[in-house]
Length: 122
Image 1: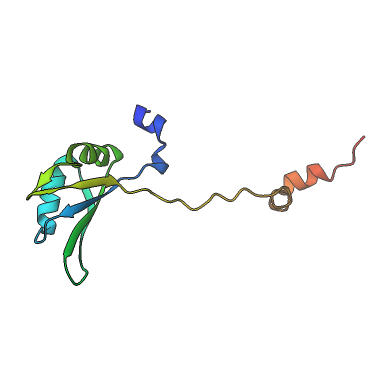
Image 2 (image 1 turned 180 degrees about the vertical axis):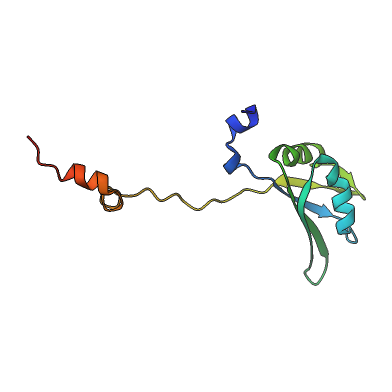
């Protein structure tokens, strides 16, 4: 098992990064070419937001591996592109809470456990 998987289990790792502070006019192809050097890109989206005075451009990339995402963040966060300082961060993955069954739910769901618990005690 790779060391990175022992530190952060695979199912909890994020492979998604967010790039902020892109210059207006940046294309999806520009982003994919620049970040493709870090690994296989599964998806990439570019967002442009205009608030009446200025336009902000950001991108979200999903890599095929956690290692690729981390390498991209380490290499590109703080780098200068077209005069702007890039802000590159891992996107936090929010997992739904795990339901832990109550004792009653466990007994209802397990006939064997139900039979054992109903056995007369000596």
